[in-house]
Image (tube, rainbow, N blue to C red; front, side, top):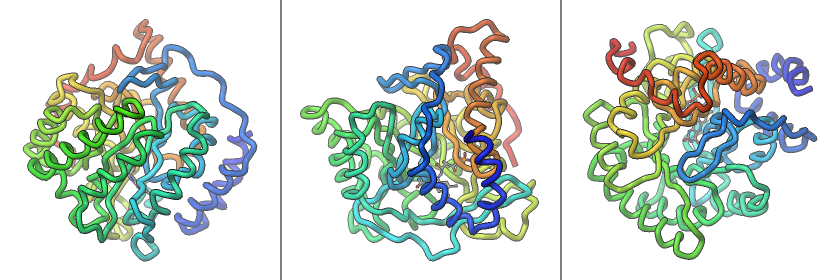
Length: 364
Ligand SMILES: Cc1cc2nc3c(=O)[nH]c(=O)nc-3n(C[C@H](O)[C@H](O)[C@H](O)COP(=O)(O)O)c2cc1C
């Protein structure tokens, strides 16, 4: 049903401005009477950050920024949904147009700039579904005009940790000027110290909530050394690698659109994001699990992420080009991979290729 509906709707959605198409998709998901997807094969289950994921495939942050449709996405077969980025106060983001499709490259460029309905609206929605089950995380960011950005993260942790399955600290969006500077060692140490402290305060009254750190794929390896060192020292529960890239791979065909400012995602991001994931994996030394995101558009790409070091994966851009049928396709590809190697669980594949990936030539 969903597949047929999507096949009919996609040409229409692609004729619209990408942001209008996205708003319409959210509206459709909010009112469609979706049946619950069949239960997942037990071999796809993943335990990470103290949570039990029915399957490793998550909806990446940015699709459901305001937590309007997390339960629809879970019903469609995602193992978890990351809502947000939410900012403390509502803000409009950058002027439109600010999302661009690179059709020939199967990529997307966005410079949304944290358009958010703000913490109160998002909190209300997450609180209303708090007993519905399923893993729903929240990705948090600072307001563009915040006088003290770290204080924004602390405030959001205090509000969201009691009701979200996990909280992601997003300091890797390229579209809020200066935000990525929080990834530098000293700034990151101060941020994580205060964030983890806030999380501990919440834990005492509401129980523990995992805190994850989402980084950019554009860090140098020296910056990655620092970021992983600080994340380990401050005992974050996991890292997400990573956000969109400001780089423009030489292979891009949509030359004109590629000149738009903003973060690139989708298929052209896969080699860089997977390399950074493997580089992160070898530095983390199993201190915590990683979520691999960036360019996953097939079962093979999902498997490559897991073999490069991801315990869990997320995707967004490929849904624009491939539709929601991709989730089922990835699940069956992962099960085939397990059967091929006579394995009972994906955990046996995590990081199997990490060292080999880090030895390859740097993706251009
Ligand atoms: C339109 C759009 C909006 C996004 N918004 C956010 C966001 O608010 N917060 C965030 O952490 N990542 C955001 N992302 C990044 C995605 O979560 C993901 O890290 C990135 O797109 C790479 O995955 P993909 O290639 O599967 O899309 C956004 C991506 C897109 C395409």
